[in-house]
Image 1 (cartoon, rainbow, N blue to C red):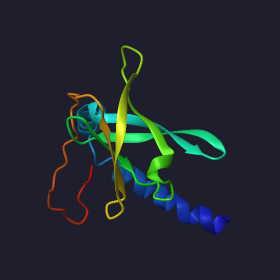
Image 2 (cartoon, rainbow, N blue to C red):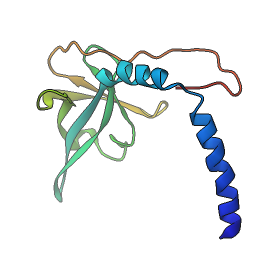
Image 3 (cartoon, one colour):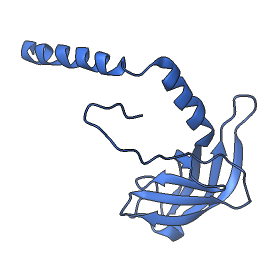
Image 4 (cartoon, rainbow, N blue to C red):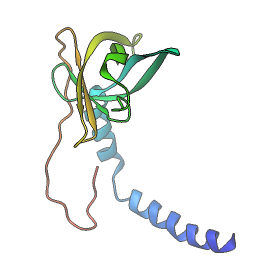
Length: 140
């Protein structure tokens, strides 16, 4: 037990030093930039045992296209058992907006699934950057 504590204390100190290298204004800027692209996705999994509601995180990657983790739309669940997809758009000022959606498919190579809103939306997609990495560099 004491050996474990001796090991954890230096790790915690290193973690606090590593976390301190990102200025708060940079973290806040990233938060402001990404927040409009974050949504929730909900669907019903229909089995012989009944209806199961599932909800998970999604990120807007196109005008009406949402990317979800593959675990949320597991390949073990047949497409015909997944029904009633909805994209839930949170809001600070009003109730979350629920938008009907359809399941577009999954890509096991990238561990992602795609959901598309049934009606045209004007969401702000997340911007991804391909930048060279350096050892010890900060990644946000």
